[in-house]
Image 1 (cartoon, rainbow over the protein chains, first blue to last red):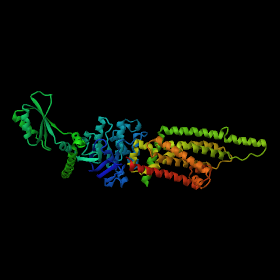
Image 2: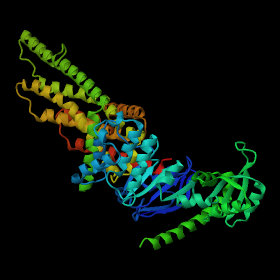
Image 3: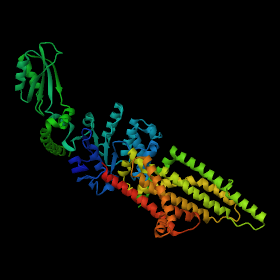
Image 4: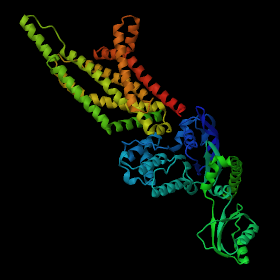
Length: 342
Length: 270
């Protein structure tokens, strides 16, 4: 549905994005994740035809965003960074204006406007001037504006900015409800948002794509797999050695803490990706006569992944190698998906 | 083609709506009506007005015993009044055109227009039609009291004269608004757009004055370019296709430059 190939944009002499390549399948929600200034907005502006790319190409529904700008613009809904609103119009009048602008036939306008108002929880504000709305409501009008004409592709630049926690949940649900029938790209720098709404994540840093995968896979493998945190009672050094021998365990290390009694210790176990050695660890400990006071599964959060990928000094090379690994992972995964679906 | 027309209408309606919801528009219209009413009264009924001048001329003629020189009071009045309305409009028009694009750029709504299936041309034409309609709405009340005054004229005024004059006023306004729209598309500051458009209006005056001062080919060439000269021609009831072509060219130039500048904006923006 959306395919971006080797896209670069150079402002003067500073590159905003370099060689960005990714694609979005129909019905998918893809999160575009990156720190501020990573090139998210630039990429989205190129996708919507608002900016031309310096090199590379972007296609939406098979139409080049530059060559066939009008055809692309007919098929997209776009929420820019600042919602494009006319303060002197009422919510309803504004949405009618947008449907006219997008070429919705006159007969379909009332039903589409109503549907958008309902979806964005704006029904009770439909006759209020946009000038009088709070920031959260304005943001919702911005989203309504992007979906009112039912476009096949929706591009949302930071859709949950300025919303309160309750509204954020509403907007995430709204976005999820649009999946399947619509293809969505949303940018954000809020991590939980991505893991909650998106099928896939593209992490971009300093204008370059550093990883593309599902949120789960990113979490699982990039940060070195999941693991456990154990609080044990007894000989912790011996326990550590024994756990280390269990297959599937990569690292065991004690965590220094003062909040537990003297005869107890806390260990952190990191397992190999895809393997869950929990049962074996418990069996080993029990056979050694060591008491298990607590066992908790720990997961590397997307936050760790993000920090690792976007903190340049430490992991520049590692991240690049891993991102290559990830593209491969995505490809195999998609194959699996295809096999499952029919 | 039908789609483009629908787009123009969509923009046009939105523009009109925003004028009627804007306090600035009402303030401008109010001041314009106050001043135009004031000038109307002074020119027609004031101590130096055309009616008292005509009465004095009559009185003098009676005293001397000669027939009064013929003065077409209605025509002279119309010429003077429309001339002043033209000057007044030149002050009002930059304020009307200043926000056309600058406001859209400032609010980020240009991003909505630029990513909708609408051409820059359609947006520019729709906006110009919208603001021009607002200006025409502003001069409609003036037509009413001119009609009342002119209906008292004997012999009656041929309707073509005031019609041509007002056509001139509208064409002058459309030209200035069109160029003002282009200036507005260059900046995201409405104030800067207004100041620059004022400068443009002053420049129009300078061209007119220079054209009058020079009699050679330069003066003649400038005279052809002068919007004010063509406006005065129409006000005097002279219908010249050349004048219409000049106005139309200015209007087209403004729309063309606006469309180009918005296009360029999308290609350069950093």
